[in-house]
Length: 176
Image 1 (spheres, rainbow, N blue to C red):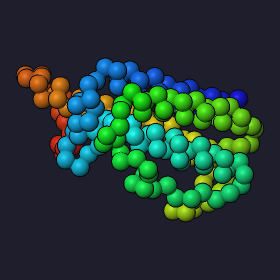
Image 2 (cartoon, rainbow, N blue to C red; image 1 turned 120 degrees about the vertical axis):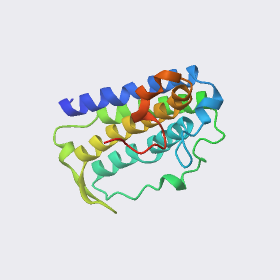
Image 3 (cartoon, one colour; image 1 turned 180 degrees about the vertical axis):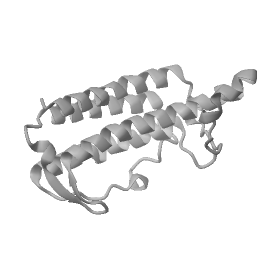
Image 4 (tube, rainbow, N blue to C red; image 1 turned 90 degrees about the vertical axis):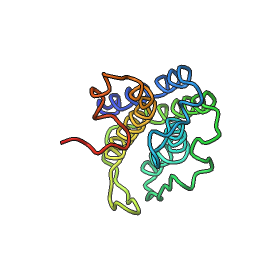
């Protein structure tokens, strides 16, 4: 396996167990709690990752391999209402299964596949290698976003230690 694909796959493989642990450890109320008005809860982040795992990233890998241009993915047009009523454990299990299938797909990539180029409807010419970078970054970004949502009530209850979390308070203007 190409070294970058192996590194990317290892990071992508780390995400489902992380989510399974989070949904086991946090209660439903905490998972559904938005960190600030207009921001996604942890459960909404998980639903988005599940939607992209089922409807975007592996679909795009197959498009690259077939030489077909990509179609736009609208995260708001998915069949699920962004984690509002979903069972977190069931969503995490579905995500784990979908990710396993995606990792199998990535294992099939051969030399030169990362250089394959197609057109993205909004971005223009893109390569499979660039999309794989975006996939890993997207995965990590939304998992961190979810953890930030889970963090908020603990910041609020930390009393004199609250100042240590200034960079992580939802809805606060960034320092600096």
